[in-house]
Image (cartoon, rainbow, N blue to C red; front, top):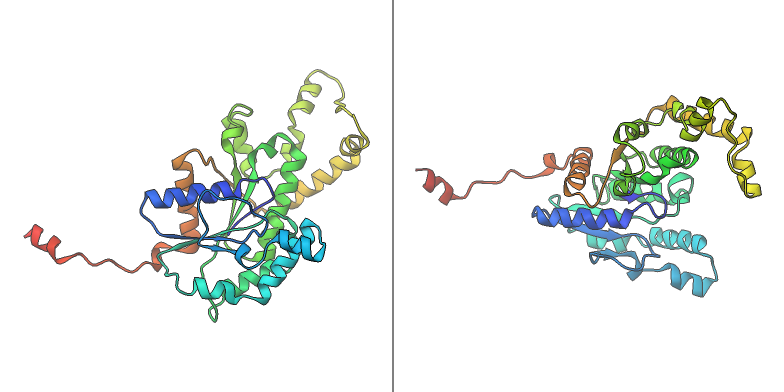
Length: 289
């Protein structure tokens, strides 16, 4: 299940993963569960928009985008046969890719997604071996507050869903020129020291002056105050205490990077163990003789 906040590159990762699988002659089944999606590089094998779409819900029920999406998932839970009829025939040799929407409340506190996960993995239903791939945009490391907020949402989804979980920093190609590889390694495991090592504050301390971030609005003033820093420290300490969020790097423009993430996914779902042993054709024995 490919999930994460809006703009994290979920659909791009799905497209890169499908391309990689096709190049390696491996079967996959692509399921779009984003009722607000508009276009795809690869046509989904199963699309929730064939059942219901956010646009139709907004027009008919006069709901907003978030309310419309929640309604779509509640409607899906009332019509699970839509998934069951298509997925029942998918064999274990297929990697099923679920492309999820970007509304963060689905992964943090709304109960509909855990109910869907239980249906998909339950032995009495589809009995699918699931793994969550949670994407967070790597450019968040430039802004410590965004990085820790995104890491907190990743931790929340881990507890909410109870699945084998991969946390991934996506769009690595966008930060190659912004941060050194040595410095980036620090962000693979959230640490309270990252707040103290904010580059602008470090430079100010070296110069022997108090760092004062630029304030252009009331929001900037709130986010630069001592209270906001204490909040970030508390979030960072929480992540460090649980010690569950660890990141893998992803660059969808790099075939090896996509293949590396796929190997972690295969390990989580024990894909290799589910495969039937392949018999050697008789003609191959004849050649050896």
